[in-house]
Length: 125
Image (cartoon, rainbow, N blue to C red; front, side, top):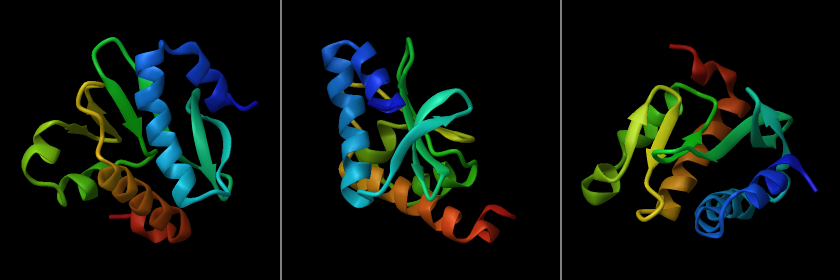
């Protein structure tokens, strides 16, 4: 068992379902991801680099793509309800469990972060 699995076990069932779904979509895209930690958070790693963490806080569920650029890129691609239901901050995307992150948004987050891992020059401005 890895750190992500252990974290999921610590959540109540409703939150576990929402958080687990995000990790499941990531694993569908990249079955070779591994579990680890980054910045003290349980994370999925891609090529030994932190790819994504998803954690429940008191007020929301936070998605942490370990990049300040990724939330900006993803926010720029969303419109309407998909955009309105999310909060974007540097390095974080927040949502409420009753309005889960759409799979297409999860895939966009992962694609943007994988691109950075594969080409570190994308992180530089």
